[in-house]
Structures are given as structure tokens and as C-alpha cells.
Amino acid sequence: MSRIDHAALLADISELEKQLSEKYNCAVVLKMLIRKQRIESIYDTINRLYIEKDDKSDPVKGLRCEKQHHLIVMYRHLFFLAAHEAQFSLMDVERFLGKDHATVLNGIRRARKAINKRDYRYLKNWNLIQKHLNSNK
Image (cartoon, one colour):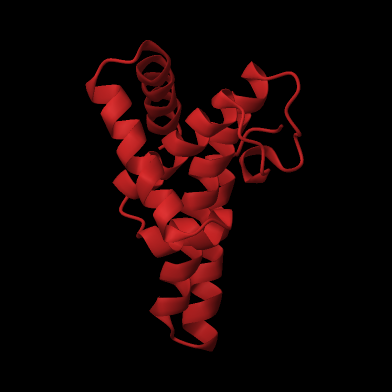
């Protein structure tokens, strides 16, 4: 998977903001586009880390696949938590990944519980995800 060029992304967003303000004068559309880019960036980062760990993963579907293998479930839960902590609502996350709100909420709770209990796998991967997301800012 290719890395996101955040400088180019910000330049594209700035250009889009200029075009939208000239044409529509609509800040709401821009905010929606920026939020979509943010959740996609979080997803891409976590999905890339998952695919690097699991050689049997489906790179096309990634975290969106229906498999229940413990590794993909853990990364899916960590995506739910990362998106939620980035101020995305349950509805935003469920729409993005195609899951229902109960699944998202349960995933957030399980990830938090595992991290608080110092589960090595969750804690190690959560720290790695945080490191990657913070380096992309």
C-alpha cells in the first residue's frame, strides 16, 4: 500500500477550499470533505499495519472483510477506538466501515478494556498506531 502524501493532501484541500468558496461559499461541504479525509487517513494507517502483520489478509478488503480472525478483530477494534478518539461519532465510523453501531461501540469498549488491562498485543499495536498517526500530522 502506498503512503499518504500529507503535504499534497493539504495542498489539495486548500485548493478545493478556494474553489468551493468561490463557487458556492459553502464551508459545510469543505468540513465534510476534511472529515472524510481524516477518517480515511486513520483507516489507511491501521489497515496498512494490519496487512503488514497478516500475510493471509485480503489487501483489497482489509479491515472491511467479514473475517473474525483474532488479528483482524483486534485491528478493527483499534480502528474504532482511534476514530472515536479523533472525535468521529459512532455513526461516522459505522457508515465508513459498514458495521452497525453496536459492533462499533462493543469494539471501542473491548479495545479500551484490553489496553487498560495492559494486554500486550493491544497495547503494543495501539502505541504503534498512535506513533504512526502522530507522525502523519
